Image (cartoon, rainbow, N blue to C red; front, side):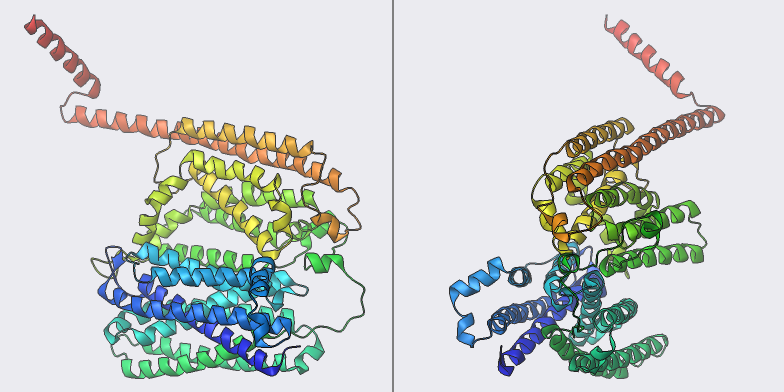
Length: 620
């Protein structure tokens, strides 16, 4: 076992790692959203923060290296010199999953360092911010929260918790270092973001504590005492956040001096909370004493084997995937916020679009956290059913909900005449080269159907089912691929490409053919494609894995063709409506010209032909 010195070093290195990474997030957040930009480029104030970004990123690299070194020494349970062995270190970083995640995080921190001096545009800053968030949360999927039951709830809630903290803590960090003149502009916008982040931190922290301390004896441990202390600090931060908003509500007489002092105190409390968080991440949560026999499903999938599936069990069971739930809650909250903004403005938003979006979100929740999502972990046929719900049915609801149109109508615009703003950044992203690339119907088709063969007819499927992060990103890919495809062919949102209806119908027919070929190939397969995953679960009510796999192919064929047929009908109807609108436009134009005594388009064309004939006669 490792000694107290190594344990202390692990905690300290993780504290440096977490604090520096949050500082990077806060700096990028300020550069991208809090400060003014200049026509999509960093303003002078934003450029000043690039040095701060570089310093924060360098400390993040140092924290990552220290975390790798001290974590390895802690695992080996030997002296520091044992972790310096190149062979041992190489094996840890390339063959051990936790080491691979640490290496991934370190590489991202290096990328941030290298990009910190050259970053110039807001969209690039946003992309670097998203990459930083991915790097921060990556090791969580192999943290102590992943080592026991309810790991979908424990890991997902921890990911949401860390993301919320990174925006909250990082934003406070950025406010300390920006100029007082810029702080006047940044604080009101950050106040809104901080409120959302605080809600996410409290909700996810409560869920994670419940998942880790769900038995009586756990609350008698040091781990529980640290959790309680962190709760107290969080309550203090919430109180300070309330004082922030109360101060900002006095728009005519804001006391910026007292506000600055409050921000400094808030930063100190946050540092204390980060120290406690670093200690929690370095120590295993209490384990329930149990004499139960080995449970294969709990070990492999992190979920106990459910009872044999029935209609009521599939409909009523619920195994929360906290990360997916967090994303869905944010999407719903933003959509509702947009509808409220339009309503207050006096504009109307079609109820049918709201219902469509709500149904799409509900389908995603049912296929990931509901009974269908639960049984999808244990049988391929249910996995394929969930796949069809996520990739075929839910995206149609999302697309018909027109979220991009709602965003363009409600997102805040620039705070002055030169700032692009959040809305302008979205428009720029839609019309960027990357946006035009992905909205190419052939690219959308390749991602939609081509990924089926890449996933199920390679070793990728079995490997992704083995881990929570793999399973999550597989579901997330289904949602994104389906949403992109149906956005291109039946979407009502603005599209950077003008795609003829005939081309859309051809793409849909091609998708139907490719999907049918895939399903038939899966139905006729004679070998298992899951790399032994379903067999390792030892599910008592699933006796014939190959028959279940072939059944999954049949389900994919049946459920996959119907949504495409519906999309084909919808495209044809849109085509007819567009032709009708064009005919009405021509008729109105003709009537207008006649009312003004002007010849209509047919008369103009005949006059043009007669003039050509006259010119030809004159030439002769």
